[in-house]
Image (tube, rainbow, N blue to C red; front, side, top):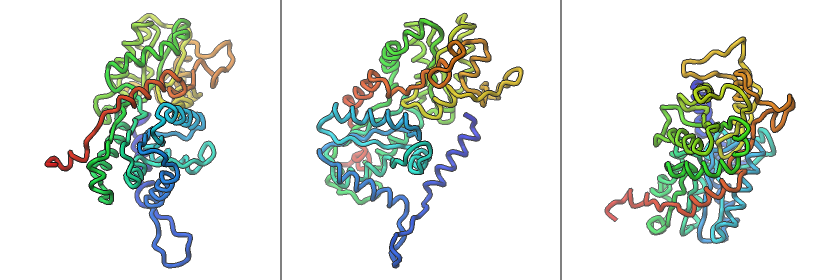
Length: 368
């Protein structure tokens, strides 16, 4: 992903949430309602209507505008409701851009998603006794930090409107991302080998994660991709793990490692190492974007831009289509997000069961 594009997207997100107002339907002197207040009102109403238990789980994903992703999220939420019968389960997006595009029905029917801060505020208003926030991120990177910051704001009663006695007693827990620790990478490697081992026997099996640009590598999380590749290669030398945003681990460097391992041709299979299959999976990995012009130009970061993994490896002499026919979005690309595999949903559920209690309230008032 180009850094300029990244910055433009970030600016758009800030502009989108910077306080636009929606006028009241009434033609009287009622003050206009900001989008933030409207969103909070909508979430409050949802929580009041759906509250059945005294405990809640909030699943926090980055977000998407793809129906395939929505189906995966719905499946995951339903499975959580079965696994945690004493909890009410809700789903949140952390990306303002994904939220706005989903509300506009960009690729499918309009759907309403909201940022974690609105859900947590609503939980506090109905006074859930226990709240588990489960990060649906793959690594503890930039997006995970948003989850933590939302919890800190809630724990510190940032709006000052929640009952102090309640805030001092509520149990707040944090469920960690899929690869929070190095041990997690080995657990995930076992699950991936179960799902993709048959492909690794037929050729190179590549996983495309997101990763963080160096300046956004919160918690130094990028190392988890390297550790995952090492864990997978203990099972088969045909496994490789790259990213779209981690320096020195783009598709170009993945091929370099393949060549170093003696894999110069043959089948290449690609799968997204992301919780859902959205734009990155369908376009950056399995799409038809192709900047080939009697060769590729490598940018200053060492990446080939405007070219999907499928097209890049095809030009590099590998087989990315089967018998000239298109399968699964036109290639050997296995376009399914991690949440579409039950054994990986089970890992997330295990992380929720092991969620760590956090005490952001007392961190604000250390004398209590």
